[in-house]
Image 1 (cartoon, rainbow, N blue to C red):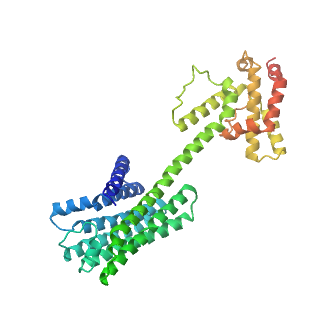
Image 2 (cartoon, rainbow, N blue to C red):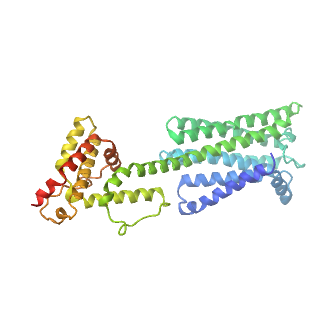
Image 3 (cartoon, rainbow, N blue to C red):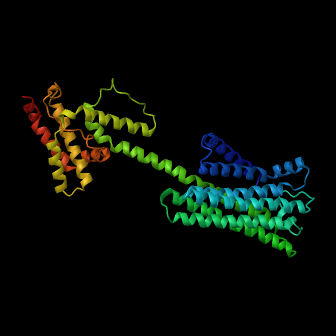
Length: 402
């Protein structure tokens, strides 16, 4: 791995952390947000301090040969704990259980970090080794134990992450399940990484030389696993946003028939508050719903409860479910009211105080506007009510006025 393989991910993590930092300041008490920020910060630090140039600079600055070893190993252990804590908080559950489990993992890996520093202080590693310290000092007392300890800690974290992600994935669906399975697959690379390191170290213990496994193969495995896991962490968030946007635009599109039906009687363009075409999807949907409700309010005097009742009975007789039958009945009443309004260009029904107005579709509780809109386009009951309204040409409403 060249130096850019370390510094580029570190820069990406730093940017991501910078984007999250304002939210962390505002919501410091949010355990999930704290976990995410800790993970981003530690991941960036691991890549930065594991880069060979940084290792040399840290050793030179401190004047202690190989002091970067316990630093990097400690950061790896802290990163492992951060991953576990993030999954625990992400999964949720009773707050006291979540806090207790998180503290146990943090305390356990805190002990590991202290032990790593202590073992390095007790050992003797005078010659700087930027890339092959694990195998070069595999037989050195205390340094040997430090190496075994950090590899064991990484292995435990890998197994724990795989188990937790797979168990959680069995209980969820969609983007979250896909993300958890990808995270588990990424952490699966911890196993061959640790195995390659252990094999190289054990070979040294027995007088052999398989250093290439530790120096070249293991870093590639770790980098691949980290990148796959990063995709797994990001996928549910990105997927959820894509899904939300798709649902919002789908709602906007499906509201189209009802919006077009009411457009002739809606608020005139010069009096309506319009939004630009590049506005967020949620705002576009809100505007369309507002136009629909304004149109229905203007049709209030033309709503005929008898039309709705007949349409409801027809929809039920045709086999529609209760909710669908209600939507078809409301849509039929709206379609008939639009045509009644068109047959009354002078607005005599509106100006007649004696006109008994049926309640608008929203008066008896919030209706499903999407169902109403789809019924306008698809329901034969609505088509029949629309045809009857055209035939009548507003006769019933004019008779009411006379």
